[in-house]
Image 1 (cartoon, rainbow, N blue to C red):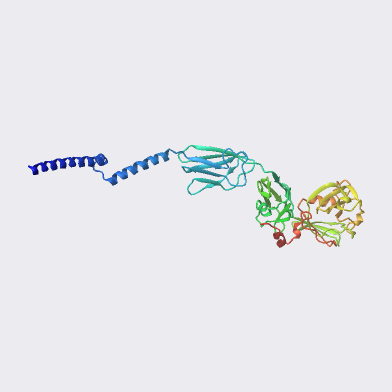
Image 2: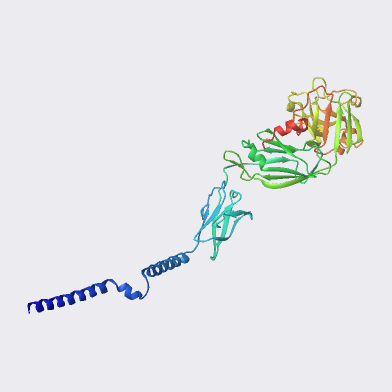
Length: 414
């Protein structure tokens, strides 16, 4: 009886524990019931896949964002650095940067096509429009305006555009501000010739840069001067403004040799003697410069005053005929109507110029002064020898031919 009682209790307790255990198990496996035959690893993969899809959807929903440097809307942007255009959440299909002057800025993409950089800096004082289109998106338009430079400089050049000059004419540039960075400025200027020949620049000062070949230009040469000085910094805070090409031609070759020992000038055209003229040069107190000189100015008539060349009031002639300048300091080859005809070819009586017999009024076509002037042009070469004076300085006029080629090249900054 006792045993049976105990046995029943045990059965009942066992039954209760079994049910509790079942309930407990059921309470911890609802996920297993819901996933059916899937393993726990399969459940994890499914959950990860769902998360990735959600993230991808968020990313796909983001529109590409385009930014430009200088920033969109800038009114006084710097012009001394390249323009950059960048995109996030996308890649570029195309970028175009256009100035209100009609110019365009070329540029390149990085490998990922998320950044475009201009190959040159923008110009100063220019409004730029940036048209950028990302793949799969509409084009985006941004604008900025560069500031104007505070101080500027220009280069005044000789000879004039579209002119024809003699074979001795260098390309001479005079700057309105002193140039500190000669190398950068010289690199922004190129001179080329057809037929091609080596042309080198030479700095005579911080405001003058000349270009020439080793020997005189060949007759018929076409020369192009390319100025790319815009926004080039010549010295701190001073920028160039020119961006232009100019051309000029070389005509026939005329070289005149003045021998002040024989007091004679021989004019040769393309190697053949064109004329021989009796002349009068500088006297013993006012000798004429010797060396190679180039005609830089021409006047049918002009006034000559001794005070302008440091000779006080020795002379003042207001109608000197057929005057052609050879030096900045005041040497000319010109007509002379006030001296006796017998002077020419026999005496050196001038204050340093080379004189030819001429007539007052500059209209007598029979005299030497008229004939030589009529046969000449800017850039023609006049060589003076046996004058009793030293060789003219290379920068006294357009007379760089008095420097050897090695001396000339030594004056280049590049």
